[in-house]
Each structure stands twice: as C-alpha cells, then as structure tokens.
Amino acid sequence: MTTAVADSPSTPLLVTEGRVLDVATGTYSGATRVLVEDGRITSVGGEEVRGPEGVEVLDAGGRTVMPGLVDAHVHVTAATADLFAQAEWAPSYVTAHATQILAGMLERGFTSVRDVGGADHGLAAAVEEGLLRGPRLFFGGKALSQTGGHGDGRPPGRSSHVGTPCGAGIGAVVDGPEAFRLAAREQLRTGAHHIKIMLSGGVASPTDRIDSTQSSEAEIRAVVEEATAQNRYVTGHAYTSRSVERALRLGVRCIEHGNLVDDACLELFLQHGAFLVPTLVTYQHLASEGAEHGLPADSVAKVASVLEAGLDTVDRATRAGVDVVLGTDLLGGMHRHQSEEIALRAQVQTPAQVLASATTTAARLLQREGEIGVLAPGAYGDLLVVEGDPLADVTVLARPEETLRAVVKDGRVVHRGG
Ligand code: ZN
Ligand code: ZN
Image 1 (spheres, rainbow, N blue to C red):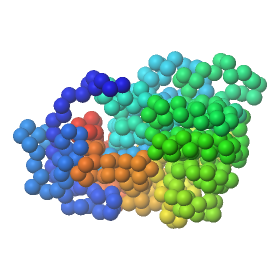
Image 2: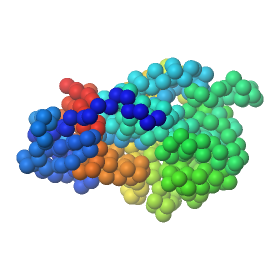
Image 3: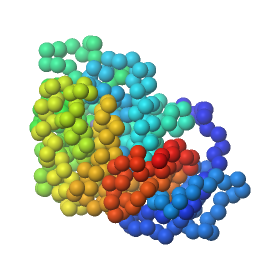
Image 4: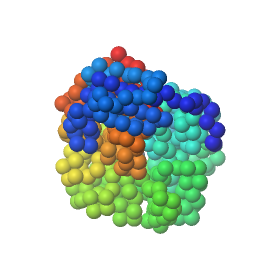
C-alpha cells in the first residue's frame, strides 16, 4: 500500500504563546513557540521562531504545550468485551467500529498507540494516509496463543476450531515452535512492529488459569529469534513472576499487565532492560461494567484476582527503577475511560513519572526515541495544548473533555476542545 490518497502538501504550523513542557526533564523549558513543517518539528524556542510566509498560527494563549500522549496497550478493533464472539463478525463491521475507537483516542490526546492484538497493516495504512482519523498506529497483527491459552476462545465443550474464523479476531491459535515461527513470520511479513505472545492465563479467556504458564520455551525462543532477526521485539501477556521470569530469560523485551510479579522478578526487568506495561483502568471497569459490555460471567470472576495487585505493582516497579509505560487495554464501550489510567497511576507515581511513562519511556519501547513523545527538532509534529499544569497535577490529562484545547498530529490541528 503505497498510494497516499488523502495527503495534500501540508501548511506549516506555528504554535505561539505556549508554555512548553519538557517531559524529559520534567520542567517548563521557557520556550513559547513550536514550528512544524512537513509534519515534523523544525524549531522550538521563543519569538525568534517564525514560520515561512502563509504559516498557520495556533495561539496557545499561555497554556501548556506538550507532546502528544502514547498508550502502549490498546486493541483498536475491540468493539465488545466479548472478543471471541466478535471473532465471528464481518471484518468490515469490525473496521467500522475501529474507526470510532481510533477517533476517540485521538480526541483524548493520544497521538500514538501500540496495538497488541487485532490491528493490522490495513488499518495502520488507512490512518497514515489520512483515510481514517486516529493516532499513529504501531501494530503487531494477531497475538499468538497456544491451544487452551489466552487467545483460545472455545468453551471447554467445543473441540473443533471450525466455526471460529480468525478474520476478525485479535489472536491466532498455534502450537509447536515451527507453527509459532511461521505465525511470527506472517505478522512480520505484513510490517508488524512487534510480536505479541501469550505467556500466562488471562481474564477474558474461558478455559485458562491466571497462574498458568503459556507457550513453551521452544515456542517463545522461536518467536524471539524471528523478531530479533528483523530488528523487532517480542512482548508478552503475563501476570505472574513464574511466567515473566522465563520470558525475560528467553529474550522477551516487554511484559503486558504483570499484576502479580514480586520484587525479585522486578529485578530481572532491570537486568534485562525490559519494559513493563501495566493496564490498571481495564480491571477497574471490567469489574464494575464488564458484564454490561459483553464480558462473560466466568471472566468477571477472574478480574478480582488481579485488580487489587495492579496498583501496588506499579508502585513497586517505579521505586525499583523499572521502565514503566502507560497502557489501558480497554474493550468495547469502556474505551471512553482511557484517560482515567493517568489518574490511577498518579496515586503512586509523581506527575513527571506519569508523563514520562506516556511519552519518553513509551518512545523507547516503540523504538522511536526522538520521534514521538518529545517536542524537539526532528520529532513528529504531535502535540497537545492543555489547560492547567500537568507537572503540578497530572490528572488534568485524565479529564481531556475539560482540559484539552487542541490536539495536533503531523502538524495539523486534528481536534479542538473546550
Ligand atoms: Zn493481555
Ligand atoms: Zn490486551
């Protein structure tokens, strides 16, 4: 897909009267202006920064100007909390839902998202070409699961895979190192930025246990080898120390959730330079309204086992110096709660730590340091104009409908609030 359909030459954008927030140092830099040309930031400074003739001006009116946010754990195709029922929907219908979900994320100030199951090269291309309004989309394609694992939606009474088409689903069920290897190559062939595998049981799957380990060592090794060969990386869904320990030892670079890991396991993150992407807000809302959005009763019962531990893990991981990244993992009608993750993190992290987790640290995870999560020459022109002082009270970002004045992506104003 190389035809840029909706792309017209972009007018340079000059943001003026801003209070530029430097998320790397957790300070206001003193800069007031940001110039974006051809989608990239070319200059950050004071009155001396001027655009060319005909530049579009966005007056920030003395408000905070900061990099667009990153959510590193989303499923933009998750239109319902019953993902296994959704696997039987028409792909076109799922895509129609995804357009709404993507637009919502952008309007909450998320200018980049990492999809860890469901989004594919077609959706990413549609966003990039301007056919769809949405954040920059880092996709992994299908999440890989063993039979009976977190990606296997069959109830125990069904033995056949027939009747569970994978077209609209977020995962693929494979067994054996060669099948995992082939599945990984299939995702990488389509341009996947990472490969997601299931390493332990999960909440939304009908037959697995949270405390299980999933994917054999040989299967994990095969996927790591394929991702590494293409300078990509493997991220894994895991809750327990047992499942995380073996994954990090085998070269998995990032762990999703991690609610039940102990302090010894957190040390391993430091040793291996691995990232942790907790997803607190989803458990909160799966517990309170999951059933109403389609989460089966057996899954609702599993939520309680990980909900309480999640916040404590973020606290311990942050104190240990682990690279913690913002993620949400919301499904269906619960996507509207995305920004609340920021307020949950703020219970145990400083505002600067929360901001880093959604900008600079996230950029390192995405292998896009200097390009996203930062306002500096060379970076994408992705920025927010925010009412309030996120460095003093980061929860202003948890209420985007009240505080977000503008969202800029690629140097274009894509949303105006207030
Ligand atoms: Zn997961
Ligand atoms: Zn997820």
